[in-house]
Length: 112
Length: 116
Image (cartoon, rainbow over all chains, first blue to last red; front, side, top):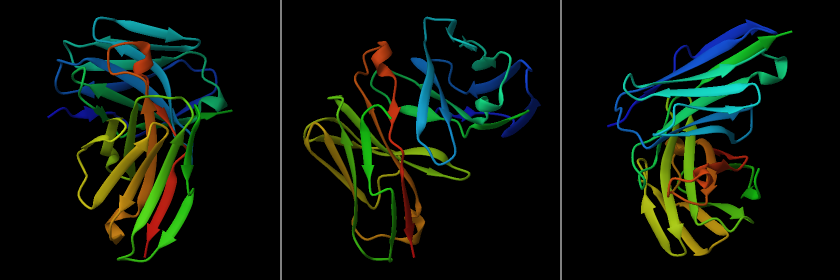
């Protein structure tokens, strides 16, 4: 059974810092991996989706990388801003017709 | 929220009563999902649908049923609500599971359900 872990559960950084959020998964035979953002009291917003054949995806200040062999993905946020404060979740899909397995998320606080 | 409306947004009910949550989409996406989110457990899949009248169970389906009579509507019913079903319920949609960027999952704003 696939398990997805995100450590630490919470992170606080000063504004302007470049930061990396980690996601690890136990079964390296994944189909794709998706990073989400969740603001308090809101639903999840998909940020980036990486197919198993890809190594990374970029959107603006965000860059997500995937290393299947080591069972890891990282979300890199450049020049963090207070507006980046949210919970970031990663989710793994193991097959074309399988469902997503979510990590519990990392709550990020960016201090002005 | 990508044309997804969940109703109600908040509900308080008593143990043993039936409850129905509604998810309505305007995107004409094929796939619809119901998740619950709880502290310490994260997001867990309850049921999902891959077309009108086509549904299947997720990992925490006991005590829940679903129906999808139209593409745009996916209903989640708690047959007899229990306190353990107090949670935030999210509906999600996607257009494909075929390996395209449309595989992205889009979420509604959630329903906060309290069972007393």
